[in-house]
Image (cartoon, rainbow, N blue to C red; front, side, top):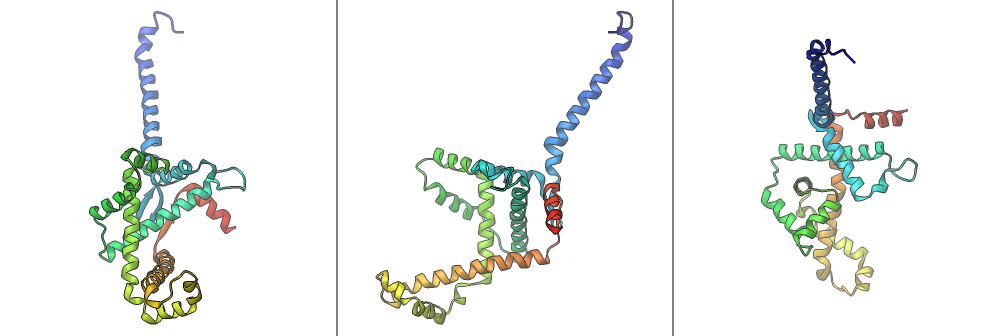
Amino acid sequence: MPSNELYPKLRPYLLIVVGVFLLLGVTWFIYVNVLSGSRAAAKVNGEKITIAQLDAEVDKLLVQDPSWLTDDDSGFSEADARKMMLDELIDRVLIAQTAEKEGIAVFDEEIDAQVEVFRSTYQSDEEFEEALKSAGHTLEVFRSQIRSELLLEKLLEKQISASSITDEDVRAYYDENQALFDSQGLLTFEEVRVQIEDMLLNQARSAQHQSLLEDLRSSATIEILDPTVKATERVGAE
């Protein structure tokens, strides 16, 4: 302890030292809670996916099922979860970028309608909000997910229209599966025509979905920057 005579002389310096430590503490807090979250986990054609976005997606997995992440081979490791969710975020960015190039947009009214369909399955707004919470969603995040799904749907509709399913396709499927339809009590072609058309169209778009993402990834510039995912990729390459 400084003597009573020295303390008044040392006091200004002590205050400076304390101030420096406080400043360092505030700076570290800002870095950990703000700046580090804004760092890039990946870049897709120059567009950044932040660490904060990736963390939020991994957190959703834990909210939905905390047992997903384990330390053994019975479940996902943190690296597995981060890679899976980063791949999903990359796909969303690629879809949004492609939709913009194609002049495809999703309007708030369309999202509102989808939200309302989901909300209508619950008896109250409180139940609806609890369901979102249980899935690790906020309403804003849920709307963003719907937007991405609608963009993909519109892209696939543009690439594979209903007219791409021909009468010959529908008739061929019916003839090949007539015994199945007969067993369901659906005896005539006209009774199941629309059902078959919808099924074949959905199958075609589902197949095109994977093909579309593979094409987009192969032609995109994708930089993986998240250290955990990068480490996983290095191990896989070895």
